[in-house]
Image 1: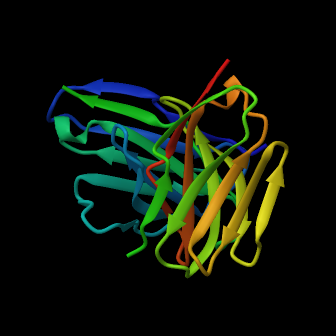
Image 2: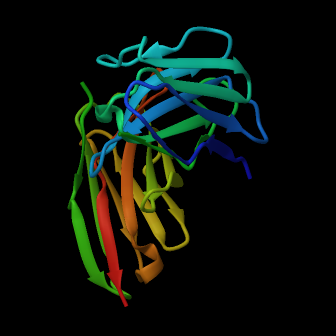
Image 3: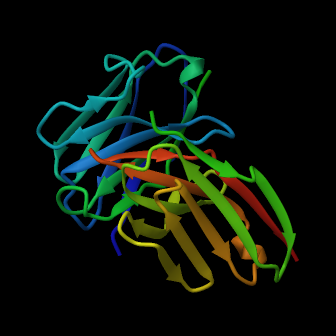
Length: 117
Length: 111
């Protein structure tokens, strides 16, 4: 079946550094990928929609300059948390849609846990 | 603004019991509704997807219903097993690709 891979699964960094998280669709092409954030005991919140070859669409309240998203190919989207601070510590999950439009099935990565010291 | 609510927030049942998880949403203009399972520290596994034109979907011991007009969905789990212990998330997909999640129901099935 289709698989979405996230890397790294865990990362610990010092405050002020930047962290890059990769999301890959392993056996299908994904024109659209999504990035979610999940704080402890809370639900997933959509951060941004990433479209291959164009700028990401950010949800209200998400700083585009802090959370840089690059969807350079049909199988890879990256999320870079720039100048990370402890409040950015969270579980980040990506999803990729197989196919076009709203009809393609969504597949989720295993998530990346970011801890900022 | 779409809001998704899941009740109960947590549920503990003995093995073998049938159970129902509830999900409600405020805006009925949805494309579909999905139920997911999330194990601790893990990503999501899609369980069932119900298109807006459908009333229910079944997979094994799971059955999900959708009443779009009243903004409600239920996930029925038959003959629960300890391996069913996880967090169950309900999400509605709005037009424009956006998934809005509920806070989840933490299920514990005791052996």
